[in-house]
Length: 336
Image (cartoon, rainbow, N blue to C red; front, side):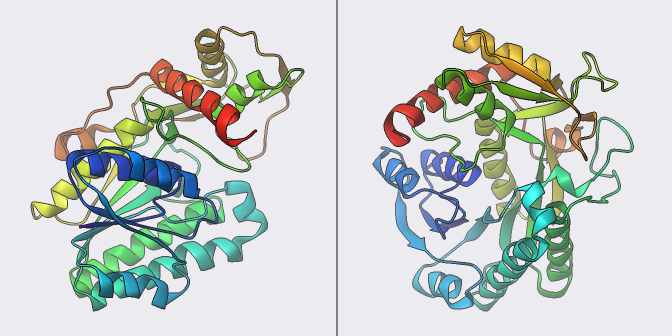
């Protein structure tokens, strides 16, 4: 049985779905501060090979909340998504991020050790690298995060190293680049309030007459002057978690991997893909650069391909198409 923390959120729910369709029984633990109960209901309604044994609403900042899950259920491994992840907010309120992300993780790890659970896949981020010194970014790139969100994730990575050496808690840390898209059958998808990610924000602008999309910075040293990012499809990302879990189940040692495509797309290219998929002309307002936006962030994913036998299969247009289908459902069913 697999415990999925943060399983009602965007990435966690898609991983939960992949686990269910692979035939795993899962428990979802989520505070619902950022996740949605409707997502849990959608997951439970999906006819899959596995099943949700339980959904438990709780907070990792409360040790008893998470420890009781291990006492009640026989957990084989954990996939840990539960975290706050807004970069700008983390700069304004770092205490919130360190307390939730780091202290909450410490409570989770303590509960795991007390109940003899020694395998975890951890949702990390390319934000641990900070400003890129070279492109593409491989796993040996220095980790110098430039915001408290990235710092909180790096702290957890280092804690996991120490816990492996001291207690034998084996981990795989997956460092995501820019995650995009939704379930290809539109059963679940991205639902943030407020939404800060590029693709859903472009798509949201097509549902409001007179709404203009704001494009920040067109004078970068890139193919067309706008920022370049590596967009990894959510279903490809979820599959990597299954392979990481399999790696640990087969005795793999603590390790870390980048999850990206190695192909960067500029903001203008993403914008064009959104117009192509929607068939709509999207009004745009060109703004100045945002502070702290690197010109380019692209992953070197060779290590994940070689060790986990993982490979991204979806294109940017696949991600935009699934995101648009989900956004249509979100606007018409949930956000009325």
